[in-house]
Image 1 (cartoon, rainbow, N blue to C red):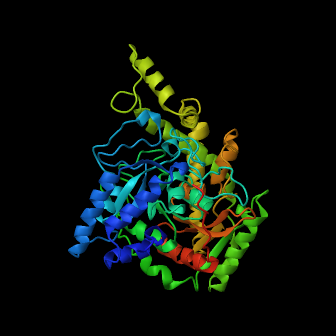
Image 2: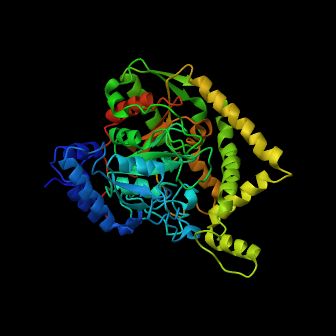
Image 3: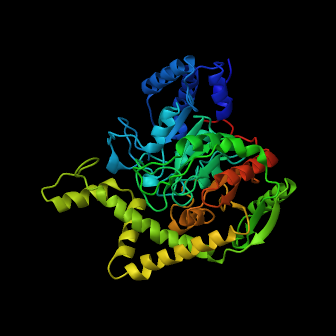
Length: 490
């Protein structure tokens, strides 16, 4: 029988349609792998009975010729997406035992197209983190290891469960979210493909909110084609989300073979950071050469406001988090620490329920929104954000895509950066600008560093132009020929 987890998502989809593989066989194969990979801590919960019931329903649809675009394909769901009648915790103690009575729009769209959920994936608590070490349920372990070493590495964050599960072939693909780089950075650290769509391309309804003007759902998959297939199902207008864009969803898979001939690729000179590893600089130059050889025109561009993106992000995002997380007080759902006094109940519940990083960001956000500092910090940050977005849009009048590294380093060891929040925040240095401006971005695995760890290249595109972005990403993928994968030690 075919080794199902070795198939790409696209090939598995085709095998299911051709009835070469049954949905039940696919689900069983992935469940066995996921259940046998507890050492990675990628899944927070797996429901074999529910998964097999959904797979059998898919087989019945396929037998009748009624299967959807993803009928029978097993996926992992980041535990930030509310799933009806299935516990959703956002990896936080404060939401322990919370079982939503409704389904997020993105997961509902995937279910509509026949995808089968294997279970819920680990993440940084409330998606706040770049290493998946802030989860109340323990860190996710990157399936990759440094050559000749067995120290545990971070899979990136906040979508570390998604990236690790995809890299270890525990699911055919996974949902993820990106507020400042939480899809693209973990994809880069695990040798997977991560897509942050245009803000508003995917509905935020039913996704536990971190920073509402920045959050965006997207897929993590093993290949560009797989991610294009997933995004088409995840995306779409949703009247329940006021920021959802009412526009047709293109067939992203159909444009992959169009190539990049005639496209103009910009290289932002400000992304060349002091102290950036030479291996990343060299891979970036190699990416330029690959695109040039494929027929694109490559030119230098300038984005001088880039240096302000990270400080702006770490004012805007905590401010919105402070507001969004005010609802978790122990009254209606989740954890409650009982006390005679309601104010004490609020305080004790939040102190016990939120982890250190979430508390840090709530405090920062509350501070910058306070009466004496609102104008000095939050209002000023929003003005600079507008200038950053305007500058980005102006550059895209002259080029079709921007090429940058995805992350400033390869995967790092667990605990290496937790003592220095600033060092941890710098993991998002190449990714936050797209969130502030609303542009789509994709990370593609393109090479290995000297320790045998994957490195990614990022492409950014105009808002609502994911088609061109996918063309560029597919050309990069074809040129890079990245086939490395982690050795199975777990």
